[in-house]
Length: 326
Image (cartoon, rainbow, N blue to C red):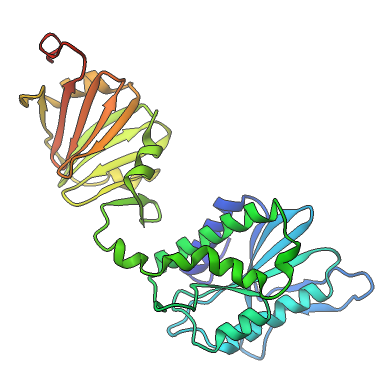
């Protein structure tokens, strides 16, 4: 798969992850329309030296609903001409379709000028990011999160009912309703502690815990300024002085290997990393808590394992405590 730019690649990967098969990128593609009565060709070619590229995502097969996404990687906000162009494409495809419903969406991380909303709403196009409200500028990661949320919402929506989305401005309003609460999102996550890889998106303690609960510990080690825990299923957790980063991403294990400081029992007696690992490797995570300076996970309902930026601690949770010291 060839991509014109990073935005296309990221949007394609998100669509594949959410929708599975039926996702493709078409560059300057001439697409044969469906109607047997009208053998015309709907061309995705514009004026000379201008190409129209499309991310095609099948939302439903019965009835067949296809989302046509225009990924705009611009140095400025998209203008009404960009929206008019996509209105024409989507209208043409629907005019000559043989039972397929085409929905159109424009993805532009740099945002839109004020004239775009009237065109999008009257021609039933979705806009990401949303234009209404105080915030007109969002960073690319936030815009891609909006895109993913929209695809998930659309996938679930068309599985129930879809006919009403065909009439303007229903689809425009539906997309806006899914992503409008991102206004102010960047301000609230500026000091975010949790991040999910590989996308690097701001996350939460709850999402982190749901990702690691029940998984088996495979290894513990320290790298410069971080403690790392690897788990079954490819999951990694990296704890630094500032962040907890998690996900199925081998980059979380990277770094200069450092000597891990390790402690045991409530008294925090010094011990070796081999001792800590001998108790927890092969055991499943059963709970978790964040104490700010370190992350602590319950292991096998018998131990609390602390992951520090420079090492690990281990405490037995079995009673009576004095008889279960490590």
